[in-house]
Amino acid sequence: MHIAEGFLPPAHAVAWGIASAPFVVHGVRSLTREVREHPESTLLIGASGAFTFVLSALKLPSVTGSCSHPTGTGLGAILFRPPVMAVLGTITLLFQALLLAHGGLTTLGANVFSMAIVGPWAGYGIYRLLRRLDVPLMVAVFFGAFVADLSTYCVTSVQLALAFPDPSSGFLGALGKFGSIFAVTQIPLAVSEGLLTVLVMRLLVQSSKGELTRLGVFLARKQSGTRTAESAETTAATKTSETTETVVR
Amino acid sequence: MSRNAKINAVLLFVVAALAVLPLAFGLGDHKKEPFTGSDTEAETAITEIEPDYEPWFSPLYEPPSGEIESALFALQAALGAGVLAYYFGLRRGRRQGELRGSARRDDGQGPPPAAAGGTGGAGGTSGAGGSAAGRA
Image (cartoon, rainbow over all chains, first blue to last red; front, side, top):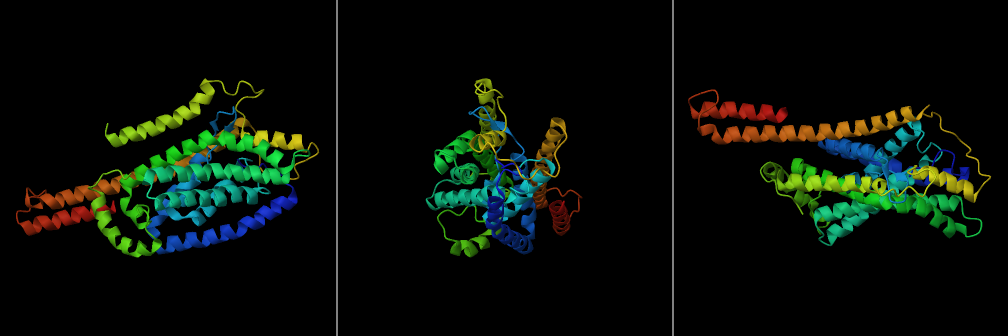
């Protein structure tokens, strides 16, 4: 999904960089706050980043006859809220830009905006909305990850169409062109990412129930105001987590 | 195989099928170079729209060959998979430790492991065992 090095005109590259910077700075702040207040989260944050690392290295064939890769940002956004993913996604993109010549430094701002900012926020938004509507946890997780993945590639298409409008059909013509390359290719991959995120979430429900309870994953329909009351139950839930192996659905 | 493990296996199977089916049905056959990266296709599309466009910056480091590139991609996936495996392994170990600890505490009245005779002594040893397992 990454826009290749040098493939955005300088003005666009700078503009996307400026647009992304505040989100990343805010993300660094909320990440350090989370780690300071809940040192026990560090491991799970690391695991969320690792999930992004694995998934964005997996280039998979798709129905369009080309290859692309998932983003893996939905999981971390659901667990730790999108700002944390702005940081973890940026780290992944930097790794790929510096070592793999995949993406680039001049296009980092644009790629961060699509993969580390819009993707996580869109996925998180859908996830919260579905949970508010009392949709079962795993269904909400699936659509959260699916939307985080697909929206990333839609943003990439928009970014390229803005930079390279078609001479005859303009912005929309170019959007159709880039959309058919990126977004259509991505649909089955987004399904795969949704399923893999559900798999990891199921493993987390089995292994880290206390942690997920503290993060409010099991709260449906409840406002964040009730979170304090809920966190009091966290300790109780941690104790029972070993004995109950029930799948939350 | 438990019901849980079955569901997980089905999830993995569907993901694998989604990756294999495009290849099996030859969905890339209509292309000159099937299954290239979508980023490369986007670059081609850019040069179609704007034939004069020249990338104005090139990567600082470029893997010298396809082999090196795939090695670095494998490294990226391996790093991620390693951290994930560490996380789940650690959690599983801790949980088993806690279970063992509480199980020992529960049947503390039965035959104590160190044959400490008195109930007070048995409680003491099992408590120590529980906390040690929890730390490990």
